Image (cartoon, rainbow, N blue to C red):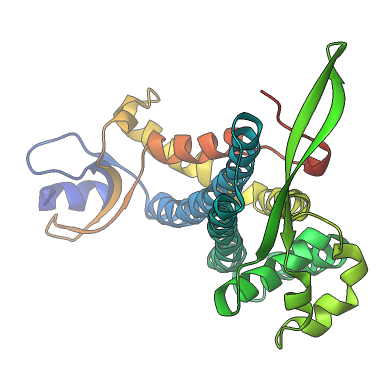
Amino acid sequence: MVHISPDAVRMHGEYAIAFVKIGPQRVAHISEQAFQDIVLSTNNWRNFVNIEEKYDIMMENFCEFERACFDIALRHMLFEIPDDIFLGETALLNRNLLNYLTSTTMYIDQTKRHLTNVCGRGSPEIAQFNELLVSLKNSNAGMFILEHLRNFAQHASGAIDSISIGGSRSQLNQKDITVYDVFAAIDLDGLRNDRKSGERVANRETELRGRSVQDLMRDAADGLSCLHDAVREMLRDKIGSARNSIEAGIAVYDDGLISGADVNGLAAIKFSSHGIMIDKAYISKHQIERFDSFVRKNQRLSDLRKRRVMS
């Protein structure tokens, strides 16, 4: 356990930046306020990273669902697919869809918790998040159907009732081509008769009937991206403040070089009067880089249902 001499505590105070390791090392003393700022900032930063990580998991699950649809269309183009294989493909799509639906619930529920951790219970940010979520469910059929499809898939039957392959003529680079596409149909009749969701689904049946699962899930991805973009904006000032505090703590130790952040174990530490570590908050560039990598990867999405991937 890291420790310093009692004389150093008496001369310079209880708070410092140092590596959490045994043995002699350099210690950069800081004020109590700087220590408290770093503790708050690192706690908040964990919440910021967790929000981004949950969003990334959700979008990767959406990508897996889209990839499974693409693979079915590709195999249909290359091979004759009998009916019994189609049953297996329906089960595969249902599995991929349920992964996505479950992760959307995880993202929404846990983002509320992380916002509460950072902003406080009953904060304006929580109210804004809830209001936007309701608005998106009212205006976006994909956002509306997410919860109902997940409940139906978990407690009744597969959300996808059947799949079919369609081929259409198009042009690409002035050449006639045939485009193969999968149409996965939700079990709308089952949803409409479901005890838990039936009435609400029936009220919006005209918006849902005739639309493929992919079309609805792309709408939902647009809505979730809008929600996530709003969360980033709500937290923008707090993210900036936490980033500044963490980087300032690193700079204190490294005289502005920030090279020590490349090594695990650097922390803001509180020592007892005897020089024994009694509290700590780890700081490193990796914390910041992890957050930034998620932000770079997951850009704002819009009009996904108007886009198609062609190889």
